[in-house]
Image (cartoon, rainbow, N blue to C red; front, side):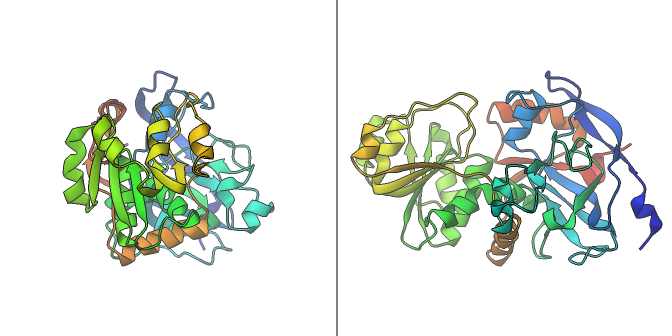
Length: 356
């Protein structure tokens, strides 16, 4: 175990300096690595819709300079003396969270994602008082508890988005029992989250209907293996599908009407929200009462379940559909993401394009 692991590590990445959200090169230091920390060289980092909200402070919780990125994969370069799960050379990933209290009821149930003191990977305060800085950078330091192992058969670039988008849809499929063969699932929004929801659900033996405002997403039905496609603006199509779905995973992060979606559910059906619109949605209650229907929410997943999701992806050869970009394209990519112009996730090639 090299002494140097206890020095602050010089790091280089791209950061937003203010709510304009414009990203540019940024020199900084990683926090001191402790005995239970893993240090890894970042190879790829996905761009999540929440990165877009964060760089522009649209949720009112950003602090600058802000280094985004929480779909991070790389190779371990150093481990602390108390690290037992990882060794130098291992392929690893870090997702949306990088810490929690480790003592509350949620943490003890492997639900660190619901810990009241959960620490996000970007723009939060770590245990030692430092600000967390994300994966649009060349090196990461993380407590081994919050690091997951990436199996050898998964491509690192296309696996990165699973660490946030993947677990965000996998967890509610499992928790709400929408993973049973023969279940009929609706997936609203065919972006970074939606396209992975389709892949996971199909691998679980579930019948999948994609629901989108854009008719041009229809190609997805064949390409991703979904069973059917509904244009949500087409009244006749929606009417014909009323009462046919056991559950819906709604990935849309813009304000949109819930009434038509509630109508698609069978009695006792579940509408699970995983997108995060920045304004409240309208929730009509009568349609819930008339079929004992549920509207629920879900936020990423615990570390144990995140590892389970990655292993499931490896077993079924599931990865995200990505457009790999150089770091200096990142501002254009953010603009395109805002306009929904990506199939289906941008991943930054940190390894080859982040040059100091």
